[in-house]
Length: 624
Ligand SMILES: [Zn+2]
Image 1 (cartoon, rainbow, N blue to C red):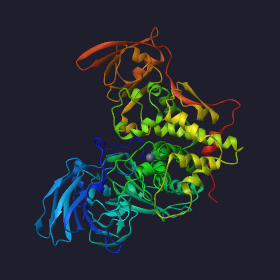
Image 2: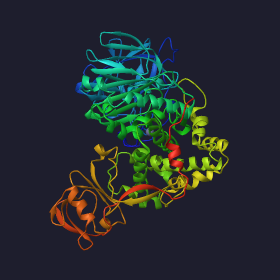
Image 3: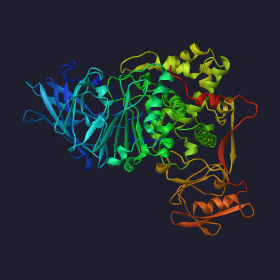
Image 4: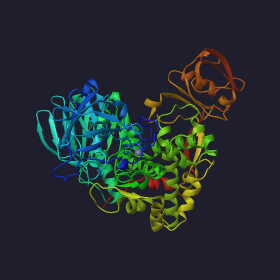
């Protein structure tokens, strides 16, 4: 997943293994699935779906589970709050059910003697609707499954009922369509949850011209949005992306890649990885806009699909140790799953042409400056941000530099940059991290399986490419507190962090974080479009002046607040000070900021005389 995706964090109740409950469902072969699952999305525009299941059972106690730990979301985020109106029947007889008192995603029901089949109906509220013209069905939100059968062995025959005249795309095999009902071939619970369905009134499937079989499945809020999806050459860019995957990883773990893209202002930035059907949400008609393709190239479009190798095929064993979806799982190795994938996204998006190197350097400078500005670095190791990832994913931005952010993404990326340069230097340019990616993440062609790994496996695979003390390399930078700014990788790659008055590019998550003025690098505050302070960085002039998050700036040096007025005051302070009038709860007060440093934004500049590894790293490669 990308780091801004708004996973609905649930309370972190620890869920014990399902083995404690005897199950009375049958595990079946693929030809006789244990259950059928019909999701009625005909009322999708009203934000409701109706689920109907038939499950083969034996008499006795049965436990049914609603998936809690969702792959790619890295936490107990299954939307149990939107699971409602559960009804269980054996024929015409209603079977009473009870919710487990400890594990609230588990349902107990007693199956009477002589019963070999039950029906389960429930409603799925407020999930999966993208807009009134499209849905993205995440099957985990619409399935209640019998515990006690391994997720690879539990076979399910799924169907979806669509609104009239809608079409759909996914990596599931269609076995038939009757009116608006689409039937799919039976799959395991694991494959089902990894195979979302994108459907819409305006839909288009486009084969990509690439060295591996791939297609794009596209929805939009108008016919024009899908008809014009190639106006900015998007199909060529995605084809390039598949070719750059091929060059980097060498092998694949799927037959055909389905890149799912929904275009809607109602869901303008979202995404989730899947083995062979990564999901991306961009703004209305986003595929036809060069600016959108550039803005979302590395953090979304390249990132989600490269998880097919880093995160799906290869996954930390601690995130893949259970036979079901009830957890708990451990997330400390996200510095590989997400950190390495962040680095891969920087590389692939630039190599494929979504972003040019200058655009990437602008982002890397900004994120490095943000990381360097965190006082929390002096008390928390980077790994801690991975271990607690799901509780810091959706927090308020106030004082975030003390808590630290989801730094395992970008600081992870910078550490992998340093590893890449280390390999290039040590092997005199013969080898690079691409060789590790091929040996560790590509490995060989397989079907859609998961090959788990440990930290020791990562370090051994790196050592096989380039002998080095990789354990100490990661120990000092990830597992121990490291207060130094994370500039080692950049400087080894020939670039250094500098500040000047040139503003940075628009941030990819600007529509979600609502920040319109980035003053953190000068006076120490970022301001949202409603003039409230998103955050104050400790140790800066604004912090020393007494300002705090959520205060609303009313005026700057006597002028009504606007971003331009604040920027002008920072550029030319009067007598080395800027006076902000701010409201905090019911108090209005003046805050005097002592500052004369001018407007400052972070950028990268080449280190004179240094080898420019970064430009080599970002250059396209041949897959032949
Ligand atoms: Zn990700």
